[in-house]
Amino acid sequence: MNQFEIQPLNRFADGLGASIRRPREIAFFSYDDAHRFHQDERSLRYYYPPRIGASLSDGFDRFEKLDDLIDDHIDSLLKTVIDLEKRTESRCQADVIAWRGMMTKIMATPFDMFNGFEMNVTKFQGTIFIEENHAYKLESRKSQHQRASQPGAPSQDLMSYWGYKFETLSLLPAPWAETSRDYIEGRETLTVNNHTQYCSVVKTGIGKSRLVLGGEVDALWDAKPPSCSTSTDPINWVELKTAATPHSERDILKYERKLLRFWIQSFLLGVPKIIVGFRSRDGILERLEEMETEGLPRMVKQRGKGTWDGNACINFTAGFLECE
Image (cartoon, rainbow, N blue to C red; front, side, top):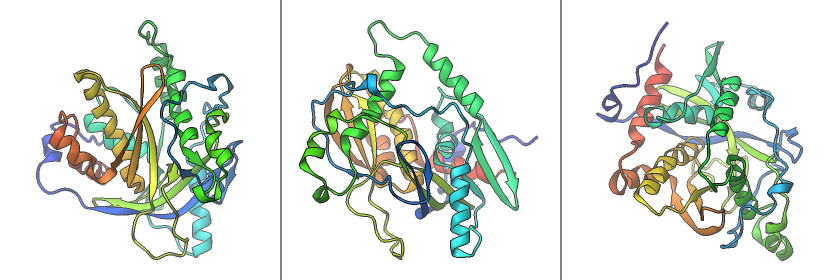
């Protein structure tokens, strides 16, 4: 059995970086509010800033939470790739096909000392299909929830809800000019439902490996170019994240580690902008910060604690994917 060693890390940080190809959307699909699959963009959403001071806990008792105990595998991604091949009458050439979430875990491996994962891998007609081992994922989540929380601290379920609530407060079903004032001002009373998703399928590359990745994107900043557009400019997607307002060196270190996943998730799908909603310890939205995905590794390297290195992540992933 072949092994790919993580240590020593400096072999991934030294020298020239692996080549990368800018992600380009080649297809998309939606899940509706009942999490039914549709080969269209009905669940596309648009960003509009939420009200500072909003409570991210409101409506928790009405949360319509997706039951993800059932393993959906990569079925929706494969359906979309098959549909693309039928429409274009050509094979979708790729060395690796996977969800963005799986590739995020691989890419974060050199600097993630707190989370493990297992993969299921199949090679068929020259393409490697990778998915996360669902049973291991559920067991890891169960162990995390069983850890004793600090006295008075919110539950894991509530803190997870805060992220979905922030998205609901920040999204519109149509561009701002086409959305009523009543809807915009009434977002705080909406029932939070995480069944609805717009998923982008992109073609990208790291090192010598050609990748087709699928993953949810939160919102558009402005408008999406027509499907027939030949522009190579990135779509102005927005990734929405929440984080506790840091008050100590330990908080800053914890936040910097979170930035690693923020960056990888956006980098892999070609999302150029990340908007972080900073919250109080009891879930009150305190401020917003916009950051450019491309500049995050440089910011961490120059002004941060050095908890991760973007080039090392890219080089590690390139080496791992090329390992036979």
